[in-house]
Length: 223
Length: 146
Image (cartoon, rainbow over all chains, first blue to last red; front, side, top):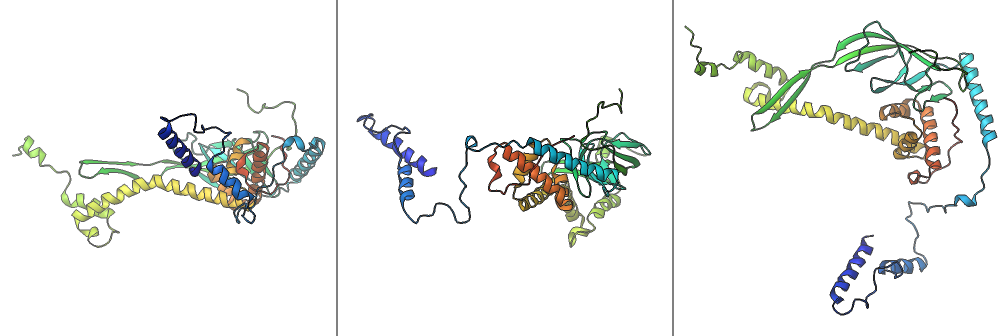
């Protein structure tokens, strides 16, 4: 790139010098006129024994345009596979063989990977008080021994329920915020503490079946 | 008799000298050499250390974020993808797991992470992005349910 720019610069310089003589005699910058750099590349490409690529980078496979490849309709096969997989998952849920579930929940602007009997600490102002039973609803991902349910971005509220209890509300350690400019008589010191809320995860359960279409949804809450 | 004039007020220098210095010495108690016990040196060192502590609290998160990114990258490279491709593919599929969760999954739940990488790969391939690089084809990824 640099070389091609350089040759262009040379051309410009040459044109500027000779513009007083005749502007038409110099080849203009156009795609039809090959540049010095292009000529060199062509020359090297014709030579034998010159490596085409760097040894540690394998050559790119030739891209086959889409219009040349045959499109196979796999929708039936896919449907079958999906049914099989969800059936297997539902079987595990029904027989209670999922093992210990874990989930990634979004609480107060942060994501936590939790499992049963975990304690998470939520930093900053958060209204729930000690003893409140809460249900964490923004579940981004739920994992088990053999399968993972991934939400886009969150899983269905009715499918997964994570129950938690607020067990403690305290303050963090004292944090010193000190700003100082030397020789400028500027010094500010502030002390602050964050609120910490401790939340115990009581249970993570899968309710109902995966990939099942319900006739009515959203009846668990009426506003 | 107490003269509470302006001239005397200016000389009031706050709490007792011993206790004022004591506060600084408490912070400098773990310093080295004379920075621990000589006040004029101790106070300079304490100011410096408090500034570092203030700035370091923010800078710490940059480093932690780098660590998360490295973990995601190296775990993704095991399956032939890079960090950038994984993040792009997941974002395009509306899977909004953040760096922290992805790094957690990469370390503790490798099978879950692999499936996420496969989803990202499929999406990146489907959208024809160049960041994919030279990769093996993943196992078939189908999306269903909610």
